[in-house]
Image (cartoon, rainbow, N blue to C red; front, top):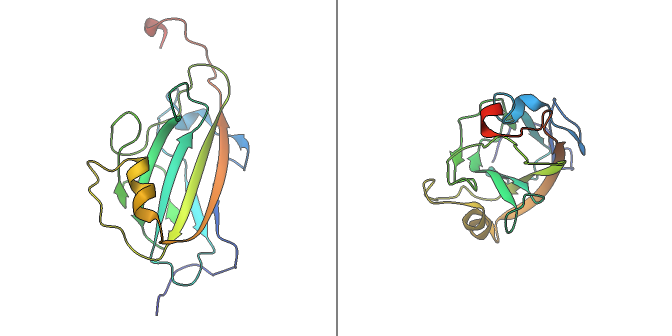
Length: 165
């Protein structure tokens, strides 16, 4: 029997205490702040869930297929992802770095999709080489449920040169 620390409400969700769905993400979590991840909560996992996975993606980025800010799997079932989260397995973002990459759109307002997956297994992947596509492929056939939280971010200040940063 699988025991979790949250109640199965029948609705699998991802939420944050610092922004609402389609709301603005505070600059603290961007390149203008500390660049750390915002706190997240996962709730209502379906029966049979063994782990969670998370992908944070900016489809508005001016690179082919957008910019992935975070790739993570084997997240514990307590459903809590605090700021500066170092747990679980963290793969490569689009900057080819492991872990979370803070938002830093060059111009305009971008949308950041925090998509969480409830999986019926734990995944055995190499964190040093796993990117968004690799994780998505490994999850095929193991997804019990998914949900997404969309946040927006626009730089508070427009930089004109590197020296201004």
